[in-house]
Length: 330
Ligand code: UDP
View 1 (cartoon, rainbow, N blue to C red):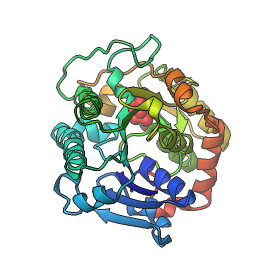
View 2 (view 1 turned 90 degrees about the horizontal axis):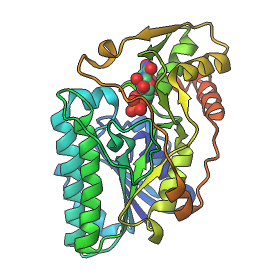
View 3 (view 1 turned 180 degrees about the vertical axis):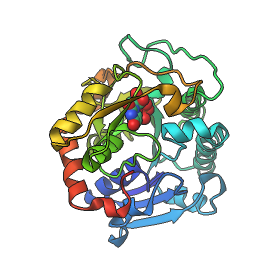
């Protein structure tokens, strides 16, 4: 099968590329390398079945050919990462909404019907927390300057674009609402918590817990996430509706910090940093994020294989094996 991955040099995209190469497929990755990195795909470049092009989807002269060749498209290209998303709201809209339109329009123009998966985000749940996050829950947003709403609505727009192109043009599009994803190749540069904690623990620096650490998240290993995305793409039970993708185990961030210190045997302390200092004064925290994955399990039979402890141990092992020299960490 010919696979096209937008955002293919990114954290999740590169794992998906690897998964498909292992399946014997051909993979074409496109990435503007804004947060994606060549080092993520360095080893894949040796494979004769892997091609990479550095390009902005909105201005890519190879798009027509790439779409024409593709049997399946994973659309992951987006402005992501908390620090970046808060700093660049115009780019968030241009790339996330504009890029998706350009891609889907090209698919329609081609007259082909590739399987398509579009990455959405748990941020579409907005301020909804303290309740079970299943796909039917009502969404609540407060427009705010300098906040997360721009990103959340760009991802909700992606879902609506997918549904619209499915209804009007019959495209077979699956929509994955991705919850927190962790694992090798994730960089802490743009704020992601686990690579930051691992790096801080290994260096013996204080682990920077934002707020009081009572906020919870549910972390899914990227190798489980990649498998779930593979199972969703082209799956007749998963077309035209959002599906949560994640791990249901929930952990307060303070406990995540303690767990990383414990697994690494580090002598690091924990330092509490007010949200305003971390993200700017207008930031409003998200207190809880835990997915219900009934829809995912019913559609695909997915079960995560990696425990959080295994992921942390794997990250610590890679760090001590010197993977850090490739710039994988903060
Ligand atoms: N976080 C933290 N220290 C850090 C980076 C992040 O305490 O150095 C917190 C962050 O405020 C959030 C959680 O960890 O509550 C997860 O952050 P991440 O950016 O990884 O994901 P998201 O906020 O998008 O869920």
